[in-house]
Length: 304
Image (cartoon, rainbow, N blue to C red; front, side):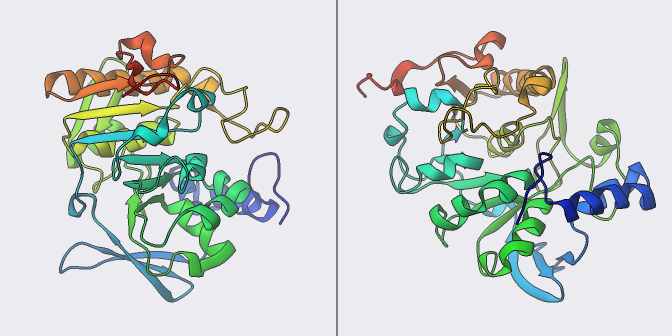
């Protein structure tokens, strides 16, 4: 299947444009699940049945139904990953974002979960997901990612443990809304230039990266510590740790850096006030500029 420079195949670009023209901007996000994808909430336990073209594929569990450890390691795909001893992260602590799933089976034997929010990753790298993500691995997936996977291979979804990444500002089957409107229904913490949701089952507040989204899941679980690996934010023109020179996939991180750092500032202020220790394990990360302390424990030449 040919993928355009936009990151989506031509038919999806047409559906995206058509949805906006027909439904307007306030409902343009309906393209995330159209056509064919449905989500039905069960009244007995609030779990959500995932249905594609009339076929029930899986039941998405709630964020709060999972067991979250005291230490959570959020592992991105930034070039600095090559400077870190990811294999020193204990089992069942790492949440692997996008291409970091390639670490499964080598550096990471037993991840806490994987997380993918942008369907463009699926169109480019679904083979990563197929080859590295085991059937027992918990998957944090957005609605658009689930729909893209279903278009390619619906059998992959079947029977898996899935937690929905719900966009709190563009909710399923409802119009877009502001952060203030979202905050009237769900628990939100806002500070300075950013805001985060404290209830991912209700929805998260997107800021332009799956890293900020997953951090909201981590913060809401109230751990003792959150570690950040490969969340560089400032070198998006360089190859990700799994890419070769000259083969860099599109990234919007550079133009979204201000918004991303605003969200991470809100995370830090909340964490500082609630006894959650934040540690940045990337020596080049923009998180260091906003006060995240650097932890050299996992440097490639460090000893635990």
